[in-house]
Length: 233
Image (cartoon, rainbow, N blue to C red; front, side, top):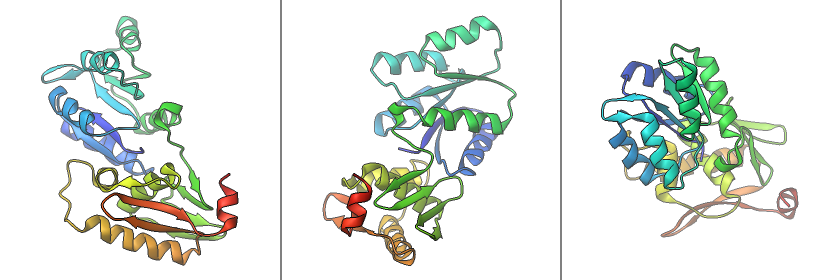
């Protein structure tokens, strides 16, 4: 999963963080309260949680402690205006993996999020490969040998999910969430249109893989030659 969750009630700051992450190919869902975030994380998995301490209906650290007590070990970065040593210690003892004090540079926040996304629990690589196809989220490029194609944001997230699955079927709902999240209205055939475009781009770069539709289940990226299969062993 390459999508992150931002739990921040300051609308402008949350949008700035979302746009900074989108600039390196990481899409995000925005939640403005503990109650919204609780529902969100119950419906989907995230690569990283970015949680503000001061939320309208509770403390971000209390929310994090609840998640950890329930066995959710998703990497978490805490945002706060409190810079005392005791506050940082409280954050780490509550299960946070990193701690950023406001105000902060967006480039630093993005770098810290990308570092957390390397954690094994997130199962997310910054450059992903399968069956000879490589995806670079930073440039939004899909490559095979010397050929490449530029991916739209939704196409990028769908391909990252499929490559992470390594040939296994990914449910329609999981792909839709990865591409558009919970906050964006999606037309009924949006996923099919995205898959159609990805198939054309896979053909354009002469990939040894194809996107297959398993009716009623979802989609999978399937190697199409012995050389592709050998490359992923």
